[in-house]
Image 1 (cartoon, chains in turn blue, yellow):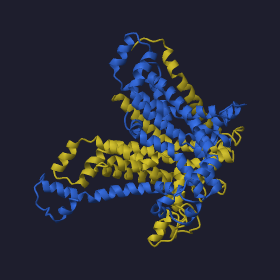
Image 2 (cartoon, one colour):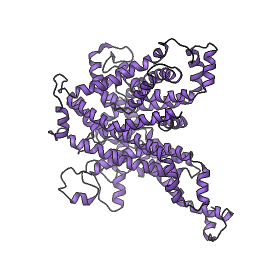
Image 3 (cartoon, each protein chain N blue to C red):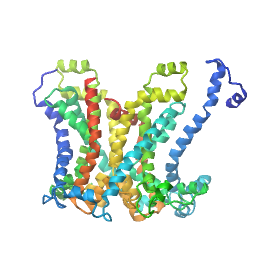
Image 4 (cartoon, rainbow over the protein chains, first blue to last red):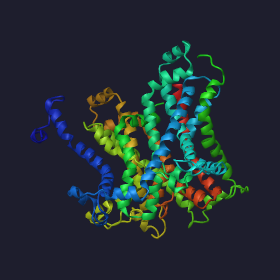
Length: 313
Length: 309
């Protein structure tokens, strides 16, 4: 490329802003490119190792490094995925992850949106105090809540088998139980994020609508929610990934292995199978597939969610 | 504002208040109470559970000192690694045309679960140098294969030489191996937030500094870092909270064996394996205590933002 020509050119004494200066900068940028590409590769290697290995036979995984497989990409096999999905209950665990995550995230977003509207556009005594409590709760470790909630669930357990879904009607090892727990644990962040976004909507628009006789419900559904789609999308992605990737809550509240989500099932595979990587690599990649698709399809919203939660006020 | 009946706001808030009350507020207070009761939450035992944590009477079953020390190590090393990595990557990626692609590569680990990351890195850390990438590199460079997740030796040989090396050292290699995985996952977060902060710095300021003869190094330290410092504080506090609550990663990678327990994993063992709710609750309270300074900072910041809205 043009870079090669620049090496021989004298760079001393060039006037600033001249064409040669630009070429010199171009040459000076080589270490930058090496650093950026090198770090990006370094960060990708662990994931690539896992993905490549998941397509190799057990003998190959145990016998030679994953880097050897890159030379022979045509010998790859889907046998590990077949084994994992058909034999190890991973298909059911995948379904469980969806059954747990979708309603839990819906609860969080719906409940948080109503509360955020009240915080942003209604006046009531104690509003600021409640907001401060909420901001404080953002950082409370989940561990503070687990023992009492578990005791509560044991006490309130409704031992009736739910048809189709499986699990009990309520309590530990029940889907409604973990929906409510996840739904509640996501709330402080969700209310905080949405309230900040709702509060930033044009005041004139909302007050004019209310003065014209629109009810709060109409303003909420016809003005606030449609205008807040970016924030709602960011929150939805965030909360979805947070719940999908959770291990701790599932570990505490889902005793029944038939209800276990992917994370819990894989964690158990790690402890029971140790180093049988043909199972683990394929299982881990299946669990990563959904977050990766969500991430690549909606990366912009995901990044916005992070920024809204941590930078903006 | 528009006139509403007094109870209307409370109706809108009710579902959130009930859920937060039942699942966060009431349990937090109840955990305080249980930390003063015995293992079955029946008899009052005063501060015995806290004394258990301080005196560490059963180091073989649940080593509270190791867990407390490791939490401190996580807090400090994890944050001290992740923030500079994120900052350097934010600065570097912002200067190339394939910024989005490079950022994606760094950011992907943020989207996957700690469980998946644990599987990925157990494979990286595999002892067999024919399979494990870390040991393949080590042996290529002429080193010996290392048991990254089991080895309690200090990576700094002078620390190891200072004492008997079969005792758990204060700076164990395996803890650093775990912290590196955490850094791998969270650097993307630091990078994205700091990069947004960088983009907010007006190009005129930077250009003025360049015209005045400042080199890139001086501009970085004397202009970018001071302007970015509020954002750096936000990133660091988020990472501190993450470091303190770290559970999944340690639980799946080592299960707390080889003296890698942190407070969050020890809490889980005490509360749900040994079923000592007293010590478990006390450990949760200890975790909360670590978080309180961050809580104060974030509430202050929130109040400041509200005043300046």
